Image 1 (cartoon, rainbow, N blue to C red):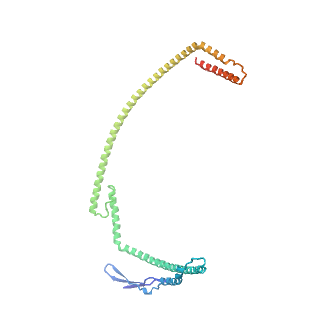
Image 2 (spheres, rainbow, N blue to C red):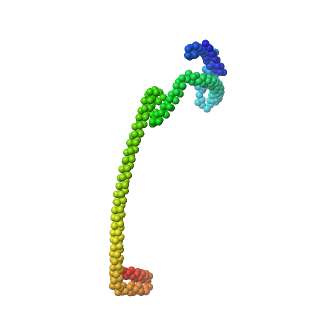
Image 3 (spheres, rainbow, N blue to C red):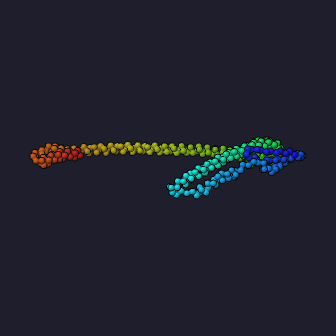
Length: 323
């Protein structure tokens, strides 16, 4: 039996002393290792008494506590009380800052030691984990060997199955017995033969349907050509009718226009004597001489009469244009 004793000293803090007993017993096929963890002796671990240090600061504060809580200034004449309040405040500030510095010092040292402990134990754990992983691989050699054999079996069987079709992910080929696999492979072959026969049947149906569709296509094209020819003849007849009607309408329009022109010339010939008379009258009106007036109102009225005579003569000429 081997015995290992470890004692890690870490500055102001000491980790628990760990005693591990390793008992080795020879057996037929394996080595048995028993690990015994004994209760550590804490009496050798030096400690930093935080409460005692804090009590030291609290005892200093106690000297001023009652006065700090009762001192009250209510008048501007209490100058001594004001000075006393300042002295107590500065003293308490010094105690507070000293206590804070001590806290930072203790916490910093503790953090460093804790980090060191954490790092050392992590390295120790990683080393053991590496050894455990290697031994686990040796321990499970037969399992790994069997797993590798099953992989080879699975690959070979997958190749055989793929010859007849697609793989089924739900089928565990690697763990099948040879007899079960032969039956499964026979089923795959039968399924392949059925699938090929079904595909051929569908292909024959498609060919037959294609021939029927081709016959219908030719027949439809023939009917469509006949319909298009009939529609073309109808469009030609319709175009001829529209052309004929348009020509007839043009002749009729020209005839009506000629009749209107002759009637207009006849009307103007009949109205010519009256037109001449009205033109002469318009000329007479435009040449009328208004009397010469001397007063302002008379001159204004005479000018207005003259303007109206000219406007009236122009209106007569506009009316004559209709004759």
